[in-house]
Length: 62
Length: 540
Image (cartoon, rainbow over all chains, first blue to last red; front, top):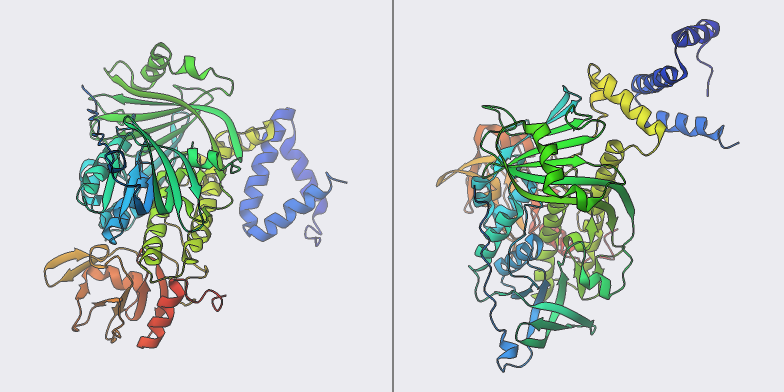
């Protein structure tokens, strides 16, 4: 994948952590699920989404 | 509050048991359900004689299949029962999904006017079977209905099939050129042949309760719709579905626990409180109760030489999406004209094989859709439950999430685009699509496209185009005057759906099989030959 977050990598990562701040593990999982759904809707393109799902899954199978 | 009055059909001693030699018939249809009866009528309308054998002598006990889709109604229209079904049935087109006590999403299955038939009607299967039996009686020389005739064995001899049949008067043998297994999900034919019928099995159990009540559970002045709840207040943590049927009957479908005891759950003392939780203290009568599990599965091959599987015997799906009965009627639509063409000598036997190709494709589409709906409705793992919960949460105000909510994707007509009987082409309605209805004006007044297109090969020409005369091919002109039947597009629906000009060749089952701009006789003959399986090698 190309690197698209620069130059605001740290801003993004900290914003993501902040979004989870103070949540129980269960609530964090729920937030993550919503994030996946909303980001997927933003990307929209089904081939791109399938490609990302596949690539992310590969790390589970290593 | 009486409920439907079941009138048994008469058993008549078959000729084979009254001294006649074993009969040999063009077609034996096993099963007098909606599929077998519709097929007998379709064949009769094409001049083909059939014997319909059923081990029972009453219509469907319980309402069973109730949702009949527009395309199915158009096929029933051609078979002569569509208008009667429409008149009796409850018309609906809106599906409404709820989460808890809040509505989250609704969909309109037919947002546009200009169709003879609505998106859906609800009508109990027993009425459909009754109407079909009565219609079949219009063809006494072509349809031989044999109730209490149970097929106990069959042997395929290559060019015909022999059947062993058991009746109250003893057993007899008969033979048929083709054996049409319309004997349902538990097909005895399939079991005798040892055909593998395993697929995705769902563990969830559902309770169906049909209740009769004066006051509509949809509320006063409410238009009947399809209501589906995720986690409703009256049935926490599960799903529920509500449909209206004629005669003040309402269908309630409740998801049960995976390990629920089906027999205990269908006992009235268990069912009544569940219904009261939904309808309150309004008086009602339990009409029919059933607890079911389901599978999504199809046969690898629908055609086994002279034995052909049609409807549930070939494929079963979950009920969410109304794709069982509607899928089966599309099977009938597909096999009827092909079988007639082969039996009447106009088409090669290979045409039958394309029934398998086209309807196996349709069935796969139905299974895909109904499996996806069931998976959404019944999360299997904690993470599936998590995503489902978050989709429902977002669906309250996020339009994209509403569209992820899947309570059943309702039956749509199947496209046969790209399959080998169709000649490739580009048009507003592409080859493979079924006819789209439209209102027309003709010499005798207002009519509908589906009422004027005959059940044979037919050219429809839009605008000032000359349709060539081809033997066996009917012609219809739209927005022109010719020496064949012509109509004008009322309110512009037909031209909007088909274009201002252009020519469509329609198969006998109402699917577009070729499109042209200005075809000559040769072009049409070639497309017809292809659509009848006469050019299998060339058609790639």
